[in-house]
Structures are given as C-alpha cells and as structure tokens.
Length: 220
Ligand SMILES: [Zn+2]
Image (cartoon, rainbow, N blue to C red):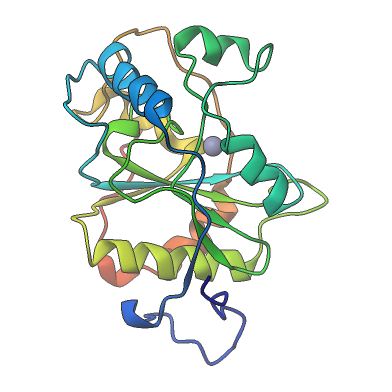
C-alpha cells in the first residue's frame, strides 16, 4: 500500500503534479455478480447495452458519506448487493449496491475502491459517464474540511490529465443535468433529492480548479 497523500502541508501547490499524487489501493469486492448487476444496471437504468461494465468518464461527482469513518464507508460499499431492507426506493430500481471509485478520508488520504473506468452506482442518471468520489464525513459533527477539498482538487486534476473530464458536480447539483444529453435514466420518476456534499465544499474545490475551465453546472 502506498503511504497517504500529504495534503495538509501549507506548501502544497494547488496544481499538484499528477506524478506526486499518492493513492491508497483498497478495492471493494468485484466479482462475477457485481459485473453482472453492473451490466444489468447499465441496461435497465441507463438504457445502454455494453459488453463490459466500463465507462468513459467525462464527469466527476463529489459526495459525502455522512458516516464517521473511512472503515464504515468502505463496508457500506463493499457488498455487491444492496443489503436487505436498506434503501428500498433504490433497491427496487436495482439490487446492485451503491459504491464509488474513490474515498477521501478526513485527513485527505485518497483511497481507490475501483478502477476509474469501472462502472459504479453513485449518481442516478449519470453513473454511465461519471467517476464517483465519496468524502468521509459531511455531518454537523464532522463537516467536510479543507484537507479534503485540497485532496479532491488534486485528484480531479490528476483525473483530468487522464480523461476528458469537463464536468465537476456536487451530488446535490446532479438534477440540473436532467435536461442535458448526459442524463440517461429510463424512468422519469426514478431520482432522489440529495444534499451532499453541499455548496460550501463545492466552492472550495472549484476555487482550486479555476484553470481547468470546467463547464458550469446548467442553470435549473
Ligand atoms: Zn452522494
């Protein structure tokens, strides 16, 4: 395992070179069933027939776990199927469990759960083209912090160097994409209202990424 990224140093430049980015590998379970359920989700929910559950990312969606620790977040995403009785509205849409590509710990440590081009269920309508980044915390007791904002920005900069990322979106903003070509969801009634990670955090992250000239979030 790589040592964690040092994001708290005040000398860390905003434009962290991709080569300097340290990412801890802690993969969630990926097996034949997760592959099959991911293909099924792509077909049933996004209306996309794929040979493999892969994505060509053009977007990064930032989230907050609203859980206290990285370990509890990891164990939320690790099971292949949504645990029985949990999130019934989501479970009815697909038995595939939610996940993300990255977790960002409270100190800014970046943890990769899945390869960036593997399908993950984290944002209705947009999973087919979006890398998901979950930040540990986002509760009144554990609000998202500056180390996390800097780590998110460094990660997005790194990803934008590898993929044609044009959109950086807070999960609470995602419904603005319903009227765009990026939105792919077969049911007009399948969506939920989200508040994570919040406007303050997105403002912090975007302030570190101005030079990337990302597309603005569509107006509602
Ligand atoms: Zn979210």
